[in-house]
Amino acid sequence: MATSVPPPKSGSVQTMTSLLTEGLVARGHDVTLFAPGDSTTRARLHATHPHGYWHDPTMWPWEMYELLNIAAAVERASEFDVIHYEAGYYPMSMAFTRLTRTPVSQTLHHAPSLAELALWKRYPDAPFIAISNEQARLLAGLNVVDIVPHGIDTDRFTFSATPEDYVLFLGRFTPGKGPVQAIEIAKKCGLRLLLAAAEEQYYREAVAPLVDGTQVVYVGEVDFETKVRLYGGARALLYPVQAGEPFGLVLAEAMACGTPVAALDRGAVREVVDEGVTGGIFADEPSMADGLHAVMSLDRCRVRERAVERFGVMPMVDGYVRAFTRIIEGRKER
Image (cartoon, rainbow, N blue to C red):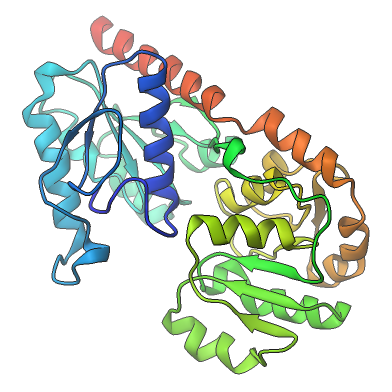
């Protein structure tokens, strides 16, 4: 990691890294976390730099710091049974897979392009752990050893039985996330919409002109406590993604607060949302707008219960232990 673990604000890669690390320690495994010195963990911490690039804009490019962390782990490879890398954008760790007898595995947090797959296929034996069936399908031709869905610390997501009078969009401001579509849907339904994400160029160019501070309100990038409060206060989470995603962590997080979700049928949405129980899945924006009030009327207690059943941390941790065991045994056989 090139940023602190867990993250001070948003950051699914850092969050999943922290949950997996702490869960493995809780299961009795000896874990070393390669991350900045300002990280918080019960594992052994190997810090190649004192803090993450969020705290120091001169730490650029961030990929170089990430690469140095991977290299540090490989340099100590004889101490470990397996080295695992959580890849935000690309699995640079796979370049090390032939340089050590200790297996190097990777989990990817985005949907790869065909050009990326063509490049990665130069390392067909590099083991991947997919986060959904949808992502495993997209990784066809690579060595996908297992599928382990993301988990969340459901105890930290406070249940809210009675929401406030708004719907929520939470996610990066990119065309693929659909913030403009979320605004259009909220306006069509006559609902107040809160937007929570870090300000980016797309926000300034395409989203900000639609923010009026009354019906459409921008609240900025939020820390964990504020995120949970926003989830719990929302009548529904809007997820009008234009490009399919391999999981959709915000869906599980919102549902853990009892908040139902309205999502377009893209990527792994059907693997995360139980239609008619935890949310609604729609073919397009007009049908989402037409069905949004039905989504908001779903039983919030049942939404919470189902999220806890499906997305706890320890099932994810046990899945990774299973995957790591397969990888280690496979390396021994070869």
